[in-house]
Amino acid sequence: MPRLQAVAILVSAAGIAVSIYLTMLHYGGVVPACPTSGTINCEAVLSSRYALIAGTSIPTSAAGIVWFAISAGLWTRAPGWVQVAWALVGLATVVYLLFVEIVLLGAICLWCTAVHALVVILVVIALASRGRSQDA
Amino acid sequence: MRKPVAGTPAWVMPSAVVGGLALLIGIFLVIRWYTTPVAPPALAPNTTGQVVATVTGLPPSELETVGKGTANNLIKPVSGTALVGATGKPEVFFYGGEFCPYCAAERWPLIIALSRFGTFSGLETTSSSSSDVYPNTPTLTFRNATFTSQYIDFRSIEGTDRDHNPLQPPTAAEQQLIDRYDTGGTIPFIDFGNRYVLSGATYAPDVIGGMSWQSVADSLKQPDSTQARAILGSANLVTAAICKMTGDHPASVCSSAAIQDLEKNLK
Image (cartoon, rainbow over all chains, first blue to last red; front, side, top):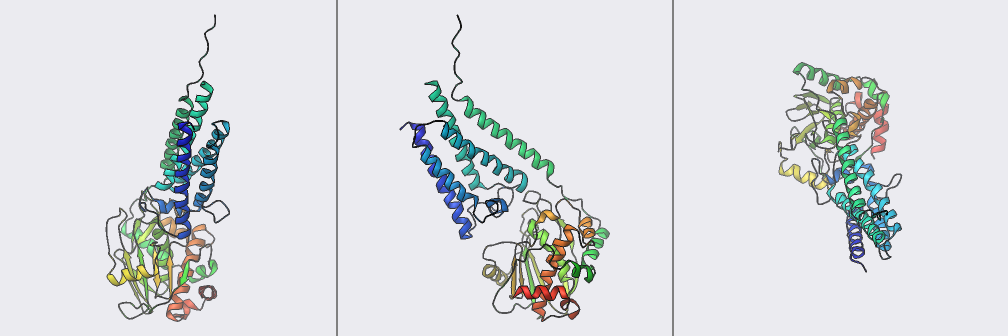
């Protein structure tokens, strides 16, 4: 298995782990290990209505578990456009969530930012892998 | 002879994505900066007096008209030894912080409700932190306020100022109370004589975001305004909880149809 593919699977696994942590916080009613005042404020973000999938009581982090799990599955196959397409779906979601955090809430959740960074890494890997396969 | 065209290097697309994302973040920050309400300018003492006089002297008929309004009923029943204040009357205990936008929001209805049972002095205008969510939410602080009533005692703790500097630490007994009933650590926390508690705000702080103290006070004179429906609705919920504490005294406040109706929902 090419190195980039293995890295993508590891990054996806890390995303699943952080998403599970955030989901457990939601259902356990536990305050995250994160500053709770000022601009860095996980509680303000995670207790906002945007932390739930619209019209449900399901936290968005649960959707994160599913997204990263599918990503891990996709990366067991040879790199192609399907990984790129899936990564771009994740990137679009990250852009929306960044808009919510920065513009609507004025607060940044560090754990959410970690998840966003993992999605961006997967986008970069997907595009780089695609570029390499085109070069070959 | 034509030269072969080289393909796009592999690093170009990832770099474009990261660069585009950084640009978007920059745009979002500019939008946030542009739309963030600034802290209202400090009020002259006589204007502060006018604001306080307006919110503490709202006609009962207006509160009756609004009823529960758009307020969320977050008041929960609790059990425990009745909380009694310094003068031996049932105590309403408030724990918050001046930085906190939810506390800023909830002080308005709390002041309106308490003013139906007694008299405040020393209320001062301030606004929540400019670097927190719902920045610069206008409010009145309990920092130097005193409250007198023949029905209840009121004790308030403003834990920190709007810049997060320590202000008024709770006593050991008050900390025990907070630990027992406010397990999520949410502020504001209001204890109604250990019969009911309220953690959080009963309406969203953005209802009064970007407004001056005077405009908030003026909006409360119009029962159909968004602010009146949220703040007066919340004040009625708080009033109902206090009426439960006092055994529906005074009747002039507690026997109103709106309060009686809300009391039924408090269990």
